[in-house]
Amino acid sequence: MNILLTNILAKADPSQVEGLARFFKTGPGQYGYGDKFLGIKVPVTRDVVKECWKSVTFEDLEECVTSEYHEVRLAALLTLVEIFSHAKRFPVKPGMTMGPGMTKGPAPTGHLQQECVEFYLAHTAYINNWDLVDLSCYPLLGVWLLDKDRSLLYDLARNGKTMWEQRIGMVSTMTFIRHGQLEDTFAIADILLHHPHDLIHKAVGWLLREAGKKDKAALEAYLKGQTPGRAGGDGPHVRYQTMPRTMLRYAIEKFPEGERQAYLHGQVQ
Image (cartoon, rainbow, N blue to C red; front, side, top):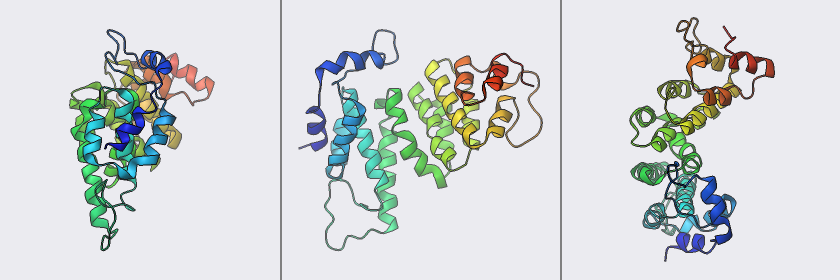
């Protein structure tokens, strides 16, 4: 029995379906068109995952992440994050019972975490809304790549088959920001600076804002067209004057009001 699927289906609330479908833009021509909902709020999904993630196998995850229902896919992704995050304590394949002679050494931990990452990357076609991206990518891919080559994220941002893969490339840098590493956020933001979709504008602006919380001077240097940490700029067409308005508003949200208005009116040199 797939305990994750059984438990999440039991939480379905038809009274919430219409509101969630509207919130996640499932109408014709909208970014979530055709998605289906069970009416389960995120805190409820998290509670289900917390209760049963230790008993979930990769086969169970496969069944759930490919579901037509949004909340079942989210439950699969949150479960995958739990398995990945707890690999040091439970370094065996999910669904196995710790038995005599099973140790908690570093090699199995890395192996299990790699399996989680490979599973995630193999199923990005089902990570097809902003919440599915934002709640899963940086606690998994971001953490995994902290001490590794990060070209994967650049490739997703440049060549992602969907805007959701491109958003994964951007939002995964949240983990780097939290560790004081801002360079990849600025570099990937440049790749997506003139993306056509509003949801990418919001994601890039959000991550720039978070980078600015760590280092306001670096964010300002980026916005003015400078390479963070270096003198000089790109000439008269500085980034903040050419980036989408939504992206700029998100990026400078925490600036003092006077500074915000100066950026919004193109008065910052």
